[in-house]
Length: 112
Length: 113
Figure (cartoon, each protein chain N blue to C red):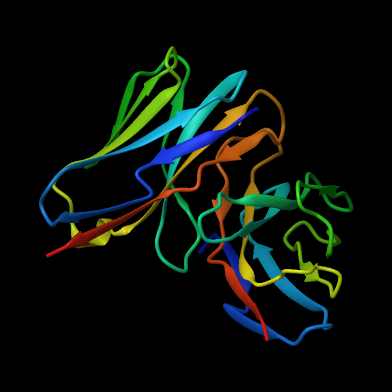
């Protein structure tokens, strides 16, 4: 069964600290994995995409990693800011037109 | 400004009423999608459309209907047949059906009273 699981469900960190969010998937065949940021009451916005051949990709303070062998991805946020408070959603695409599998998200709260 | 818009932002409905959620995009994207988001669950696909005058059921289409008469518009009707309609509804679009990145609208929160 194709699944995408994220952990933790929620996380609270102090401003300026780093954190890492996890995404494990059982999707097959794997095409790519994308991380989205969703502010409360808004639509998700893409942060980064990882393809099979990529191990690490950075977008400012966000760094995503992918281990295709263990089917795991992580999103590392460096020097967190209050504006990082949001839900982070992992989405995995299977080969095919509309085969997207969404994780349930990690709710991150950054406190001063 | 190019983008995807949804209206209204908040919508209240009495049981037994149909309501229509608007989704408009000026990105010239061929494909459009409707998702439902509930607390603690991943986004679930309701309907999608690859091209004008064409649409397909997603995973949870029962109680919903759509139309795609214009490329830029993909309205969703939540009918009285939908037993648990209270949710956050997200519309998205992509350049074409096989294009990877989905651009999302700001969402509509529907509450049934």
